[in-house]
Structure formats: structure tokens, C-alpha cells
Amino acid sequence: MNDTMNRFLGGPPLAVAGKLVLLSVLVGVVLAALGLDPRNIFESLHNIVRWFWDLGFDAVVRLWRYFLLGAAIVIPVWLVMRLAKAPRDRSPAPINDRKVP
Image 1: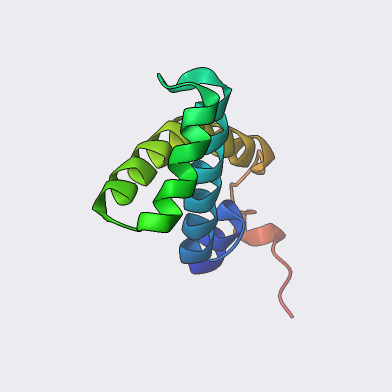
Image 2: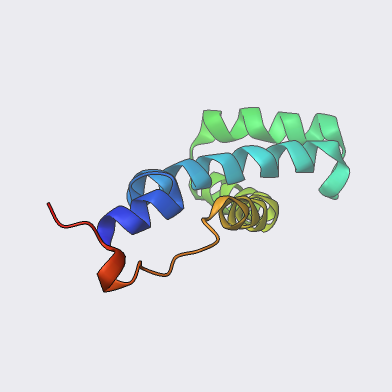
């Protein structure tokens, strides 16, 4: 089961989850910079620089918002891509057709 899960996810579940979180944050920042955030682009860039400077709770809240924005795109696309690559026939071979060493 663990091997099946690793093959489906494309690696260990924790590593895949970490990659998806980072990619979601990155896509969220890009989408927000492209105008999907109510502020203009320069103000968004200023806020990103200020986050790294302050490293306060407000930065965590905004990072969470960007994560959710990016995850809304990344997770469904990733899931569709994984399902599209999944093998079509998963039924085991009949017992009589199996080769015994």
C-alpha cells in the first residue's frame, strides 16, 4: 500500500505535501501580483519585502492567504495530472496466469 501511495503521489507523502505547499505559496504570490489581489502590484511587492522585514504575525496571516489562493489552482491541477498518469487497468491477473518462480 505504501508503494502504491508513493507511486500515485510521485514520492513520499510528506515530501509531496511540502512541495505542494511551497508551490501553492509561490503561485499565490504570482497571482496576487498579477492583479488577483485588491492592492496594486507595487504595494503587493512592498508588502512582501515588509513581511520578511517584520516577520510578525501579520506576515503569517498574509502568507496563509497567498497559500490558499495558490492552492486553489495548484492542488486541482496536480490531482488531474496525477489521475491522468494513473494506470488504466489495475485489476490483478487471474491466479492461473500468474508465473510462480
